[in-house]
Amino acid sequence: MSDSAVTGPTPESSIDCGWGRLIFGNTFADPKVLAETLSAERHTRRDIAFYVRDPQVVLAEAPQELFLDPSISFRLDLKGQDTDGPRLANVSIRRLTTEMDADAINTIYAAHGMVEVPSHFFWSNRDARAITVLVAEEDDTGAILGTVMGVDHKLACNDPDHGSSLWCLAVSPHARYPGIGQALVLRLAEEFRARGATTMDLSVLHDNNEAMKLYEKLGFRRFQAFTVKRKNPINEPLFVGETEAEGLNPYAKIIVKEARRRGIFVEVIDAEAGLFELQMGGRRIRCREALSELTTAVAMSICDDKRVTRRIVSEAGVKVAEQAKEDSPEARAAFLKEHGALVVKPARGEMGDGVSVDLRTSEEVEAAVERARGVCSDIIVESYLEGDDLRLVVIDYKVVAAAIRRRPRITGDGKHTARDLIEAQSRRRAAQTGGESTIPLDAETERCLAMAGYGFDDVVPAGTEVTVRKTANLHTGGVIIDVTGETHPQLIDAAIRCARAIGIPVTGIDFIVKSPRRPEYIFIEANERPGLANHEPQPTAQRFVDLLFPMTVATEASQVSQTPPE
Image (cartoon, rainbow, N blue to C red):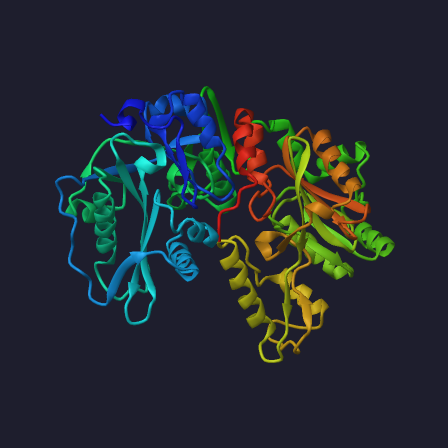
């Protein structure tokens, strides 16, 4: 009996493969230690714990952080299997030998969305026998057409059974020859067979039917071996599940995606309305996008009526615009004369419907009143402050994102009409936002064009920039620019005071500001259902799920700094 058979494998073994560590789960006696080892995964890497005994016990140690990989394990018996294969014409299989090989391998990895390996890792480990990297080279051009990595378990963890495993089989999408993957597998099998290895194992995704057919054709057979991984953005599709086909809008989808990342069960109730329920353990919370059961009906009713909202936040010391006190053309004319420019909006409404800004004549004001009454019979007329729209997203009475919402603009080219330019800009905005943002060709857009001296059918001179909407709502073509890191502390404090005065845990507070870096502002409104999408790179959905399921915060905090590779 060999020494290795007496001593067994090296306890708590793993090997760095460049893309992450291959962790030999069968060498861990304590499930807690294995869970802690997986928790130490490095940024942008993907560790794999293979041959895990009692995976349910390991998962119980960190249920929000780890998941059972949905892959199928295959094994090739090297003792009684002829691993020789026909030689490919014009293609040679050889070991990695140069730094150029390493760069070529990463190019192939990138083409398949695989984790790339630092080139210096390949180069520094080219002579290490525990890890073997093979490449398929085109004889005529020297181009690398495919690659595979193998691990010798005897050298990696003192495996008494002298097994081996295959990882990262990939073929260039530009390869002109069939059979490259098969040739790489057989050559690696022959390499390990010559060393005395008894088996060669691999793991393949459960839905990769073509790969499974190839391995079965080569003599591999399924066997039971459990794999556990740590949740991260690289392997997110394996534990989040499919969400694209559910018909949710981006504002609901961003929350659902974050919830599933943490292992929270999601039931979509009405996709069109953005209505879903989140469940974990005994906790169940219904949401409509960012509006949840944690927001009371009273808080929602305050936000629903802009007149009430204004009174509530004003009492809390928040600066508000002056409003006309009487609802008559005469009163509005006098108010306009006092302030020079006005805003007219419905007392109830959302997405900027019926809102008109920077009205400078009585005729414009009265026309805007009629538009606003088409949305709500009660209207608001208030003084206009020139400046930028600032949206502050407040969650759990903390500002988690701040963004300037730029009004939609077109730039003339001296050839196309304003209508053409608006339609082109609208198509671009729709493409960038999944159809959520478009510029309507309505009376308000026509009015804003007229303020600049143009009509829909006029050609705008080259280089001339025209603001085509005075409101900056995303739904009417506005552009969101993140300013979280530069927002003045007094603006942040005012937004939090608004949220506390209303008593709402999740809200979007809108100010008009001269600059996000200056303290001057005027309160516009509070939104009880703020859109959490389009605030990259701020973790709005993460903070929202933190509020709903605080028991998952530690898991999220370990993930938020991670960025998937390009």
